[in-house]
Picture 1 (cartoon, rainbow, N blue to C red):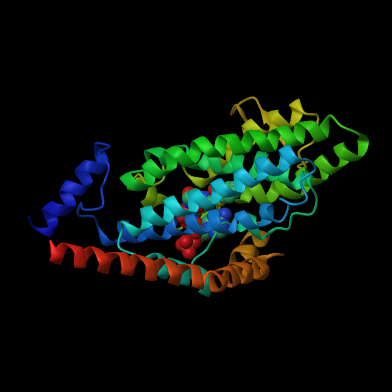
Picture 2: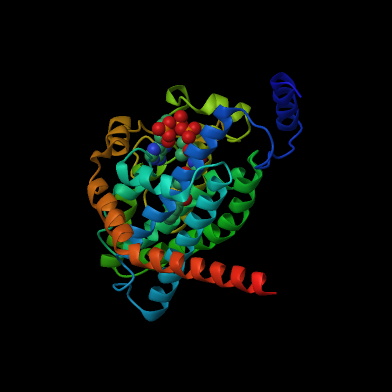
Length: 317
Ligand code: BYC
């Protein structure tokens, strides 16, 4: 096959919704885009464990502790599936971790905000996991097979996470005046960062057009943001909380909510490393990596010993 026919074969698969698999030929830029997106997605899951991890010991009951612990463990698992999916594209885990620690690779802006009260656990589950699902359900049909398959399981778990968050918010919103205030305060602080999670507006998103053509992305950033707002505003009403956007208004003509201006300067500032917790998050990850070195070394030494023993046994047989 010539390069030209490799390209044609690839395009045909994309057009016919046939998934691309690790051993298939793919354009270099398709591979690079996937490595960028999947590894950043993996980093987001791993860094995303930190804001909630801080609250495991402070959760208000044994049930809440167990549920939060399980959720944070799920996120670790999501990170691992995603690193494995990215590895099928020819990058090693060490390279990805190095890119995270050096600041070369991004992770979701949302995890650079602090978790100040227990209600933030509700807001993260409801809004952050809610936004994550809105983005990830279409990724179950993304064109790269290993990424799409990882997303199926991730989405099942995310939907449990979203419900646990909403249930915390509902409980607080139906509780005492102080509890209701905590819930409203958490919604006020997490609303705008959550709708920024979907990424820059379409006309300022350098990657969307090409990723849509390759069917890596199935919806644009603005389309997903709108879907999320339409669904979440109704949920807020149901539990008697107010979305902190005075310009939010149902638009009869479009059948969607109109919303206020998003502070994109804040978003880019956080993405560039200057959010309230960027330094702390990266420092915590670097420290965890260094402190875990002995575990990696021990696992490697054990694997090598086993391999040598197996080889010896094969030779002797
Ligand atoms: N934060 O051209 P664009 C979760 C970057 S966590 C930081 O639109 P693209 C969870 C973007 O990377 C959610 N950076 O890019 C875990 C690009 O820079 P580079 C994680 C952002 O890739 C625990 C530049 O801005 N989810 O699930 O077409 C607990 C221009 O953007 C952000 C995923 O990663 C941001 N929010 O679209 C709870 C989903 N947004 O890379 C929940 C998979 C944009 O060129 N990823 N940037 O240097 C995606 O769907 C897409 O990558 C995005 C961005 C929609 C995020």
